[in-house]
Length: 175
Ligand SMILES: Nc1nc2c(c(=O)[nH]1)N[C@H]1C(S)=C(S)[C@@H](COP(=O)(O)O)O[C@H]1N2
Ligand SMILES: [Mo]
Image (cartoon, rainbow, N blue to C red; front, side, top):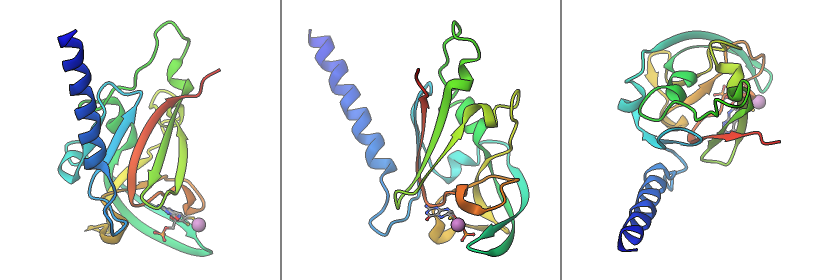
C-alpha cells in the first residue's frame, strides 16, 4: 500500500515536471519540446538534446503564403528522435501486423497549430521521408520560431512546417 502511494506520487511528480519543462513561455516561444505518448520514455528535449542525433542537412524550396521560400535546414530526423533513446523507440505490439503503420505523430505548436504525420511515412523501411526537426536555418538558430520546426522535404507548401513546436505525441490510430 505504502509502496503504491509512493509510486503514484512519483508518477504524478514526474508528469508534473515534464509538463512544466515543456510548457510554452508566456512570450509564445518555446526552448524545449516534449516527446510523449506511445514512446518508451517521454522526454523533454532542449537544443543540446536534439544535437545528440546525427545532424541532417536539407535544402528545401516551398510556397509560404504564395511566395517561394528556399532555405538550408539543419536538424535531427523525426524518425531518429522517436526511434532511438532517450525517448524511443515507438511502442508497438509484435502481435499486430506492421503495428508501426497504426501510429500517428501529432506535432503541436505553442500557438495551438497542429499537423499530423504517419509513422509509416517516416519509417525508413516504408516511406523513408526525411522529415526533420530543424534547429537551424541557413546556419542560424530559429529565434522567434522556437527551438525547432518541422521540415517536410518534398511538400509543395509550408503548411506542415510546424514552428514553435511545443509537443510531439505518438498515438495509435485505433480501430
Ligand atoms: N506554429 C505554427 N507553425 C506554422 C504555422 C502556424 O500558423 N503556426 N503556419 C504554417 C504555414 S501555413 C506555413 S506556409 C509556414 C510558413 O512558414 P515560414 O513563414 O517560416 O516560411 O509555417 C507553417 N507552420
Ligand atoms: Mo501557409
